[in-house]
Image (cartoon, rainbow, N blue to C red):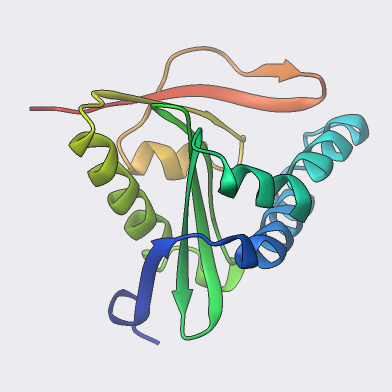
Length: 158
């Protein structure tokens, strides 16, 4: 499948919350083995459908979804002015350009709002992905209540 031509990106709706939650939680279970059981439980609670619906309705968040047909292919969430809260794609679509397309859409919106720097707390698994997108590490790996993060930043050039 040629993902670049079949992926559509739009702002999320509250009706997307169940599918978004499933993607985020399945990804965490598979790709975050370094999280403690308490950290994973906190993550699952934060990214269950009800909190996602609440954040979609909140002006403090901007959620993007990538779809291929009617299937959810990926999720990107910006919190506040400039924090990338999440960027996930379905496992079958890893390294197919979905995350890059989601990030490009979000970054375009951020730049249109005058943002010059975007932060992210990357999982160990995602550090190389974010580096390919232009993020750089700004701190050592940290354990925040059993959730392992790698603080990174993207600086808009030009």
